[in-house]
Image 1 (cartoon, helix red, strand yellow):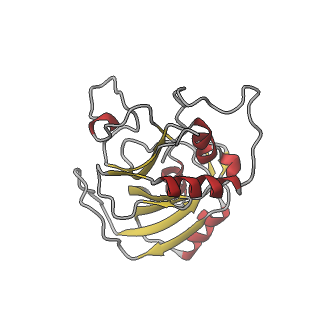
Image 2 (cartoon, one colour; image 1 turned 120 degrees about the horizontal axis):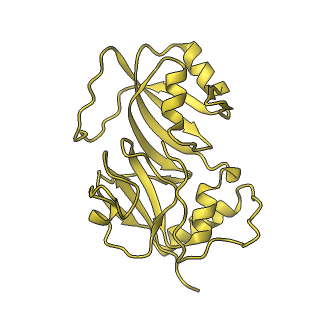
Length: 215
């Protein structure tokens, strides 16, 4: 049996979730000297945090397919005064671009201890931090969600994908899961709801996966 390689990477602000970039910006290649791994999902250029990379196409499918309802956890700095009504509205789901988001978990938290960002946040009013756990990942979804309740997002850090966490990683650092951790991950994902596979079956290991929308 070929061992799957799974990497956890702390994507810094301003770094694309790709290994190439037409604009000549520093990419994942500048941080991850590992061949034939691809990101399972993505994070937007101005978002930070956990990016999972692997050479296992089936694992990418299970990590990214929304039908598996894999929770993703974010720390979100917003501008404005967070009210109970705003939190309740976010939890119930908001309409963004004609789509109503699923129910999610949101709570206001104390300012977390985080690494400084290369480009400092420049708010124009009071700010607050939220912890949001969603089970979908449409393009810039969290930013659209907070904006819908009058709380524009200033900083966004993904800290967990399912049971995978940033841990002690710093921006630009990565670590590879051990064989035991990888087997545990695969076993846990098998217990998530199954989705209908395409007629062609699971993605092949060497096929570059299509990145889904990020936050």
